[in-house]
Amino acid sequence: MLTLKVTDSAGNSKTLDIILINVEKAPVITVNKYEVNVFGGVAVALTDSQLLLDDEVIAVWTDENLQGCRVALTLNGNAIGAGAVVNEAGKMKLTVTNRYDKSAVAEIVVTNDAIYGLETLRQAQLKVDQEVNLLNGLTFAE
Image (cartoon, rainbow, N blue to C red; front, top):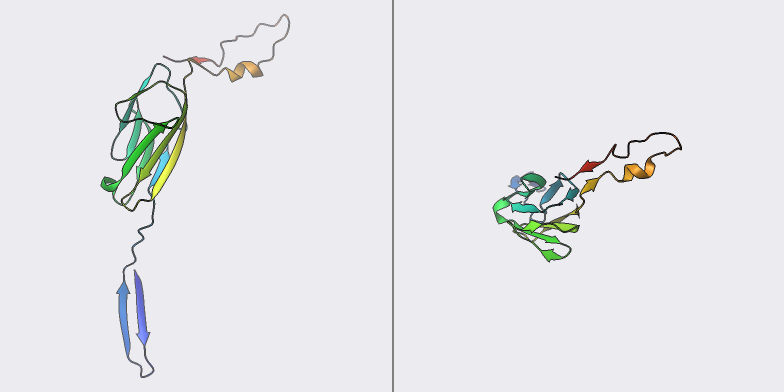
């Protein structure tokens, strides 16, 4: 709120309270997971304020009026909606647009890997006559 007080040369004054409304504020997206593995396929769910993949909250958004928000979700440029099953790697783009047509965008990297942690094998030091567990650090997708 802004209070404006005007005084003339005779000492007369008038005060007026002005309420400022910022209509140019975009929604805010908070990404909980910037990289998601979709090996075996995951189901997409969209609520009023959340993107879920297989019941895991991936992103949450806020706005002054959530009911007025429109949500668009794409994977590699192709639109996907609630209930779709994602099993392809690429870039997922979440766009939330409020009633003032102000948008926020978040990107999530989507992988489709059956084995996690292969980068640990690159760092392993292999020596002759020394035993090394090559499975150490690897995780297998369900």
